[in-house]
Image (cartoon, rainbow, N blue to C red; front, side, top):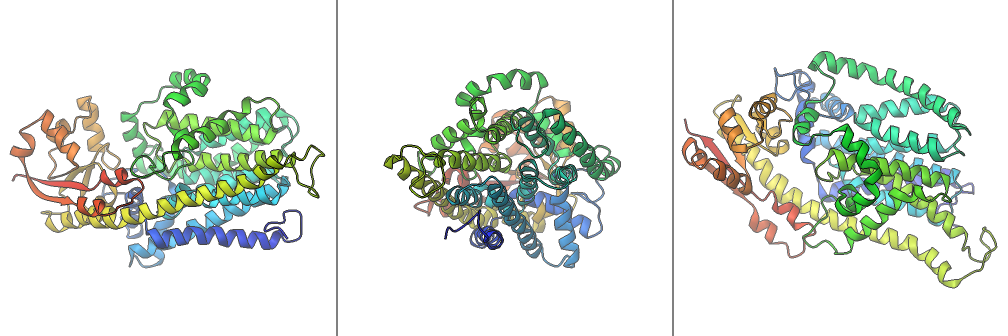
Length: 551
């Protein structure tokens, strides 16, 4: 019997097996790597303040919207409060369990979509395995980010769009609102899917005509707006704006113009081959560039992602695959335009679409070359094609497993050497050497150092600091030397190139106004590993110099 008999009576057993396999994969990855993302500690400082009665703020007394995900801040806050605020590691682990359960549920929903689409076992296994073994999706599920929640809500949306349900308007409204509660830019992916399914998927259970589907989307959008409205109104009332301060700070660095978006979209197929940022990283582990990563990984990722993004142009293609392809393209284009770098925690929102379209496309292609006794049209049985049909899923799963194992090794080393061995120590050292809790610290990596020091952070680009954003606007530039002169922080935490930049702009600043207090250098530990995929990624954070303002 096939492992996943999607036509037989073993579907219920398969659901249980898939959930616990995906859940276990995520938790094993967490146990091995113990990886906690830098941005989690930005958000968790806000969560902890809420749980301890200081409000939903980064610095008590300052109402600054220093996080992006409402659920990403509220769930850890609830866990912390429920556990008596006794253990920060316990909160992270319980949040990991919640996220891993969401990840497992997303895998189940993908299986149910495959069952409805009558995918054969090979395509179903490939779909679940590619999703469950995608290194960045697994990592950002367990490292404190909201990715696990994003995956289950996106999978629920996909199921509602593809599989008949009793009340699709309510299902979509709830799923869209939940996605918005998870990350406010989710409206981009919601819109991308709506456009894709309006244009191409005439077989959608939401209606045979575009008008019928459009009416469903409008009704669901109204419901989603109602469900999301309480957060929108509360944030506006509490912070004075519904827009997270993180978005405002980042927006000063990377300005987005509507005209550039409109002009750039028709050119995207060609431009993405030359200067695309999202597509080359779409199927890779986080920051998988340089430092012992296989040379073939990025070109292969780019090729597959490019084909996924522009399959919709093929007019004779499968309607569902074309719908997903168009949504995938819009999502990738958005990520290319809003970000100067392919930050890996954004990519899973697109890769889940790609995994589904690849599985469906593979299934349709494989059925043309069915072996004897298997269902499928009567076509010439060419042995080479039948062998390829069997080999492709094995190859895809093997490559995904290999890259994820490499990523697990890298992230385990990073957690031990960089996060716990360097940045956490810097935060604790600042906490014990600061004159008071009101001491100010100028730095870029806000998470670990901000959380463990509990000092007032003047971070660049100003995620937690309106003072930095205001100074950047006054100066009309992002010169670190000028910002330090303007803000007059008590402490500086600088990487080597940040030191060099300040020295080049203002040679007297670090030798006159500030004095070197301590160097935190873990270069020897990083270099001690003979094989380390992504060594350059770790090297970025191996040296920090802490400066104290002369008093």
